[in-house]
Length: 320
Ligand SMILES: NC(=O)c1ccc[n+]([C@@H]2O[C@H](COP(=O)([O-])OP(=O)(O)OC[C@H]3O[C@@H](n4cnc5c(N)ncnc54)[C@H](OP(=O)(O)O)[C@@H]3O)[C@@H](O)[C@H]2O)c1
Image (tube, rainbow, N blue to C red; front, side, top):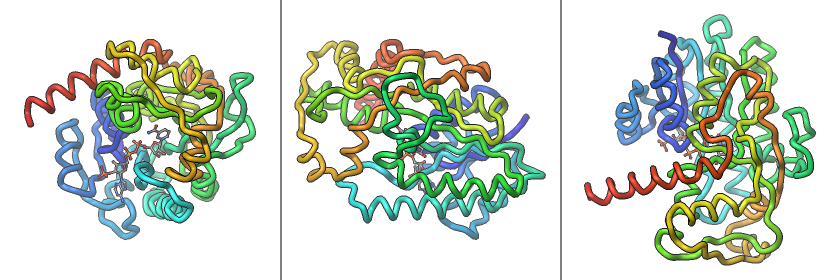
């Protein structure tokens, strides 16, 4: 049985990755920086490896170095509250530190492949006209400019032979993270969903389980040195998933619009920009590797997410 060392396995995408990798027969070793994260990882079927991704001399690096494959999903915390330039620069620097700690530990003679998870904010405002492939010129927006330095550094690791597959998920919706907090919870409580005023933007989406399955698929099928968009078949206007969630929840869709200038004041430029750029991205390269999504459109994916979220919310309420 081949093994994979994963960072960020207790997070939103990472937990789905661990579940999908275990289901696909991988032996999963997962970095955990707290006992709560270790417990969560164990429950998902992984073997926790204690350590902090920022620790450049941590013992965990030896476990990563002695693994067949690596999936680097961890990131410093991004959302919640106002994102100031200072906070974004700290995020950029911590991301560089995590990458250095992990990637410099890896010996290309031992580790077959590394899946490096970035995000489509790096491609940013590359246009809603045609479906773009991964060779389109990036116009980083939102968090994108703060991810860019980390992507530049990957070239040095590739030059010494580390086989890196770069994955760029679009907006990942699921029963947790931003979709639960800003869409499902308010709708379910009869409150309004908040969006920006002005026209809706075209954005590229993916169900969290398909995102996770695609990352697991790329562990074996991804080409080293290549980039892959992890998005579904049908980019959509960015208010559509929330409208579909209201239908699936059986509640009226109620929203309020905030002017971008107010959003900048309340949440900062980076969050505002994240809601303003648009891109219509193609998954043709991912599809060409043989990957088949379970949820090719948000119309198919959102009802599944809502059903899971309701089930998990009810279970949590019963055990409280
Ligand atoms: N969510 C999206 O819509 C989206 C879209 C595109 C791309 N992405 C990318 O996907 C990746 C994962 O995103 P996510 O939303 O799943 O993130 P997340 O839910 O915030 O999870 C972050 C993970 O990183 C771990 N972590 C953070 N700092 C750590 C440290 N110092 N040492 C060890 N572990 C640490 C966290 O561990 P704890 O659980 O212990 O805190 C957690 O497991 C990121 O690279 C992100 O940029 C996300």
